[in-house]
Length: 326
Image: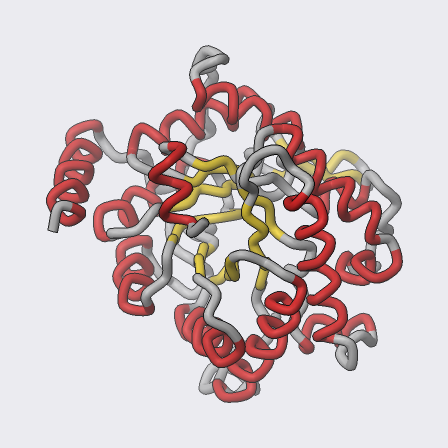
């Protein structure tokens, strides 16, 4: 079943939360490669996926965020790219196939960590090749969709899309990280991102990670105004805070549930969480969006951009309805 069909059938889809947060709770040490666990501790990866399915996720992302050869080289795994990504997809496939409802496995593809020429040393063609290699492994592992995430540069997004299409014919979703006053680190706005992603023919687009919820919501509003495909919100659980050597997030399940309600009202149809979000957050989001939990009345942190007015959101919805009717 295609992503669009599942959205139409269920009205909205719930995505999983953080992978890293759950891995650290299961023994991953700082500096270790999360992707190695696909090979050495596949049962723990499957346990995390299962926890999100049990919490109500319709989609979960594979443990392959740093799965390009450039990221894996940091852990001397760059000669095992296909193997690592195939295992990531397979771990997800095992969990999805034993579920009592249709679950989509999304093959997570993160940035290379390198700047693409002319801003950096990585040639565009080499980036394409790296993403193609990762996508091949994910496809072999059985993912349903390639999910390119946490991107700042539209050039790197294009390289990832082109590379994926060189390796497989799986549908592609893209989310970007709007963490600098409602823009990505490379200055991309939600409107510009939405326009370019439409041109690239993705099946869903949106925002993930990010600096704070209001800025993410503002960027999503711009994207919703131009998108003709389902829009994704997968925000961090509030603001990261250090307590000694431990990192925590200010966003409680109630905060994320209220955020989920707002972006759903604005028009987002695929909603979950990124850093700091746990199965408890996802379960709360599911309850709020399904109407079994009341929308929490909680304060949202201040932003640098501010949220859009109700009038602007209403106009956005009107424009989207006109476009989707053709």
